[in-house]
Image: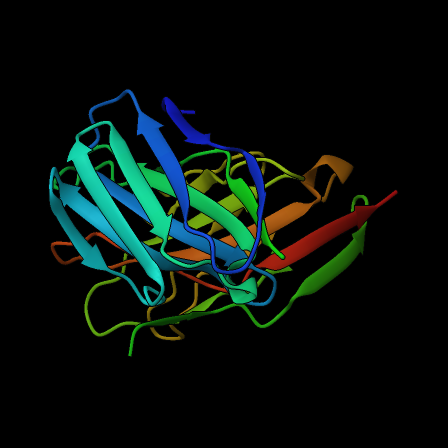
Length: 115
Length: 110
């Protein structure tokens, strides 16, 4: 599992509340990613990070923000949760971006329900 | 535009039958393609990548640049192959982002 964990694994929250999901990795990956997984859409990139304090938007970034203050932690925040953000969220990391092995390793996922 | 298309949402086959999961891509440069698999309620894991030309769990995939395809094949399906399969294209820029297809659910019936 390349040492990637996510917390919480399940969360139910109400519309309008802020929510923060945490991704933690122990392998010193430089690049980290947040995806959401929805039926019929596959995985879509929300935000990604290419180093500490270096982040950028993905294709579905509206309503989400991220922070990376340490190499090992990448936080995803839903500023004011909406029902359309009910989804399964996956964190991923890449071991070496410039080398041959560009496999992304995934966390176990967080199932978020917004009521 | 960079895109990955998996035209089948569901593919149902009997055990022992051949399997082909289709993947087509559009990319202006030289593509690097992957197949990821997700077993029920588990995390995604890499199945194979085209640059290594390997066979994992009996699956193979050949990059066809002329047809812009990277179909996943297995000659004899097993029940344990039932899973969600995603084709993905790596953007070879500073982001190293993966572009995923919408996925195909493979169901292998006994």
